Length: 305
Length: 261
Image (cartoon, rainbow over all chains, first blue to last red; front, side, top):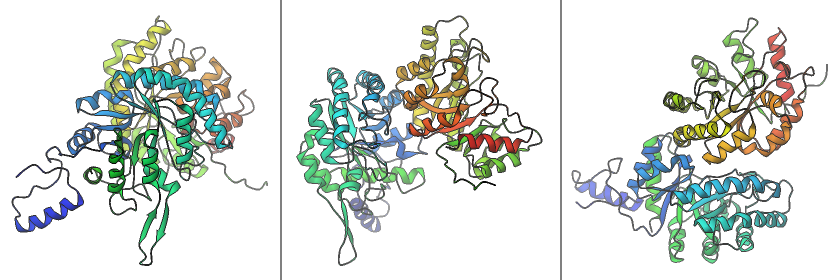
């Protein structure tokens, strides 16, 4: 029997039908599964913080086996372990969410920290470093945008020289209360204002849905999400450096227990020729290690379009 | 009697196990009273009591990850021992769901700032990866070398900030001890606000004397606490001093109220 690629829901259905007919020939998906053969048109990653209880080396080994190319949101202390598993850090952590580039008084510290993260990222041969807008704290959005552009312009040149891209994350301001970079329009305006190939948006699809999608209940009582995320992504793909996924609403598994059509979104991303990473950043519903890894494996299958 | 004020609770308060464990206080009563007063944590106590603390709805905010205060990783002879200690304590922290570990740098013993920084950097590079991967922040403590701990290396915020900058890891922070830093540099609110992202834990205490946070000492704690809360700090603030009052429950309540902004 040929080696199965990562199992999708459809594969599982197919497999269970086949298993009924041929119970001894079917391999069960699990830790001993052979490396996944993916189409690989979406370069996938996952955020470490969503896998509490999974020892990091195990997350690396299992992630590599299921077809991940890297892990998101780590510091340089983790780069060696990643490399041992043939993975990259797809987004280096740096600075905090609440105190960001929208206040000029933070710039000096933020830039100093960014320089350190950019150096470590470049030295490891990795590509992305995260940054944040900070909270509004009563500041107008246009003033915050102007301030962000002033600060980011001061560090973008250094990132360009080092071949690193600084990515500002789009977060929903309903949960991250008062966070400024909470709309597609503001984020993409900022990319224009900075005007550097080394500054892009980390477009978090879950957070964007929280801000820009509407949940509609049909006549049959079925809920759907009404949104323009695919159009927005396709139109602004040049301003996007990285994606995050997550089930909407709830930021759980990205399967059919939530409302976004991730395969369609992924196909739209592939169509644009996007070469960056898509990192899964949802908190698996499962509480146990095997269940968490199974949720990630399922997500990889869903996004391998 | 005045109307009871609604609790502000913008600061998650903690105290070191021994601070209020005196004048007849038992561990059981200490844990219950702390929870009743509104503390969110009791830190640094013996492991045998951690479960009871967590069962009472509190957390163990931090505990010591390496030894010893004056003899630690400024000296390369201690790197292997300290690495073993820190790695074991990262595992222990993970097992209890504790997310911050206190480190002590050790003394200078004739080394220059540059040499101490290099030694600390080399050592921290060994343990910061496992800390990142465990989701635990390791926080070397800033202590005064002027009064209590002569020759202790990490005695200025700038040295700690330099270390954080060199390691560039989200898993490395600082324990800013307000009492110790008042002795060494003052200018508390400005320094704290400017470095808030680097700070993973706070300690408090009145200066001089390291007693209660009352009006017989020079630090105006309500303003410091408001600045910490306003800066968006999400961690814990731990009491670490010797209370004067023999009515230890009263001392606990009074000091809690001072920081409850």
